[in-house]
Length: 146
Image (cartoon, rainbow, N blue to C red; front, side):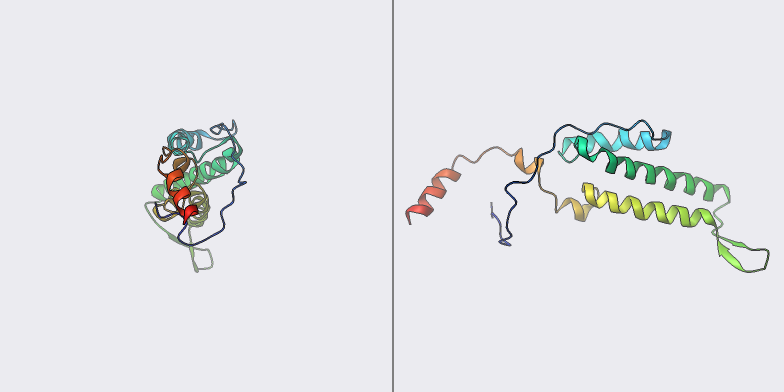
């Protein structure tokens, strides 16, 4: 309704990819389950297209690493620090794996609008799917007449 309040130049020639994203065969069981959970939701809002399959696979792979690292941490009884032979303390390697995977996930999530703040910046199929405004042409003509 407010048009383009920031006055930013719109890309009227933006490519419109097709399809709904095909799950790659190389994903492990955890990654496949995450794909099956997330992909339908992304298709529904028009974000996931065939060209995006590799990016979503990257998110799902990172998700799998994160889950497995968290499971390994849980098996250690939640211990995040261990003592080296030299007596120095160090973070458990699974902790770094979990943190890195979560950081990768976050980056992919932003790209797909899977966080509240990134979702508010999404445009595309959802906006395109809105019904045409029958009064838009009349309003445009009245502005031209002025």
